[in-house]
Length: 308
Length: 285
Image 1 (cartoon, rainbow over the protein chains, first blue to last red):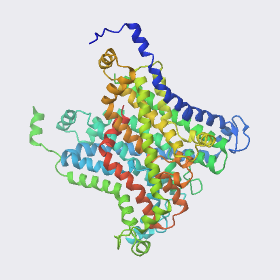
Image 2 (cartoon, rainbow over the protein chains, first blue to last red):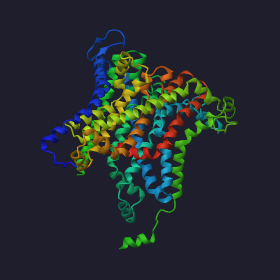
Image 3 (cartoon, helix red, strand yellow):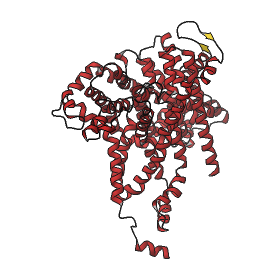
Image 4 (cartoon, one colour):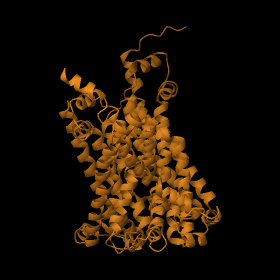
């Protein structure tokens, strides 16, 4: 047996030097697949280009055009409404549902009942968004879809409507579908978070006569702050990338009534072959995502500092 | 004192009304699974049966005609295999890549690791809209356009960006004494990684593997652009594209929905525990 001597400090430092090698594969791929393409996208956004012919440098021309493009602005507002449907409503509703399942159903009817209900609510989250789009498009088909036929069958035929085909209802219909899809994610995250709270707190408050709503508002909500920011951030980013449901459900239509920047850039790239303009839209979308992420991280960091 | 008395008098203050709340939750759960039920109910009907009795009636006879017709229409066997091959390769490759990078960042604590992590996080959150055209262009230049390999490479990077971020924070809490002891015994870095770090991180790696698989399975925009021919397409792309192109019949559309739902339900049942546990590992950290 060789006697192992403690390493001299010099050797250790040399030993530490090999670690960056482990980063080489990821660094090479990262540069090839993310950094260079993103740099190219920004570069293309300063040009007029149809994808095959020569590229003409036009500086900020595409961005100036964006500012005056009413389709871009309306797509931007549609996306803001999707943030409401995919982030704000599911987060608020999800916390209420999670607290109800955890505090009430779990305790009165057993944890198995609670996790079965949670599984049902989470189910749409594991499905591909495009498949959910196919399913809802089918349910809402104007003439012989499930919803309108069912309304007719139960004598409410007057309520039947071309939900996705009418520019006045299309966006709201998409929003409702997105709430349905998104709800499971906050519910699961919040239910896991609730296990962290000391049950003694709730018991003490209940003994003091605090109603469930009061305990929810004054105990549960403040304690769920870390989960709150994570859920809001992830859902907001998901809303900015809601390409698949728009592609499958409405193709941005009717007209441009459900167009969002993500889909608008796709249209510019591949349908109108205005690649430079599409790249400008995609760049703006990226910057927006980075701003949202940074804001959330800064706010979250500040909260953690406050809490010590 | 008085509190205790009150508590003793009313040990379970909210007995009544409990069932009403249970009913409300059950209704919510039913509403969440109802669309899936409708798909199942109507995908196995014939089209005349649907026209005659509507979507709410039970099928007169179970018929797999629509499922079979749609299956053949999009060569669903191939499509399913593409999705399995792409998602499986991405999950494995992305876990390997994440392990290597996270080893350098979390255990090796290399210089500038904070900024490297920020770069990875940004890479994962970046909207793919900002990458799609250059990737399309580069794929054409490198003859990778319309190959499954192109999608595998791109998503390996995207998923491992998140995996590195997650695993680095897990590994940075790795007990230093164990590493030190292994090193004193003369183990090189690769040996330490393989024999010491990996066995301990196995639960996290399993969660990552599951999530990378499902996330890649569900991707839409990049596979839509990079894979044009039907024989290379993934399940969501084949179904999304089929909407506008082939499907005219309402029961066949239900059949296409059913075909898309079933694999996801299978994963859900297999991975249910990992998934619900993993959502928390993945998000609150």
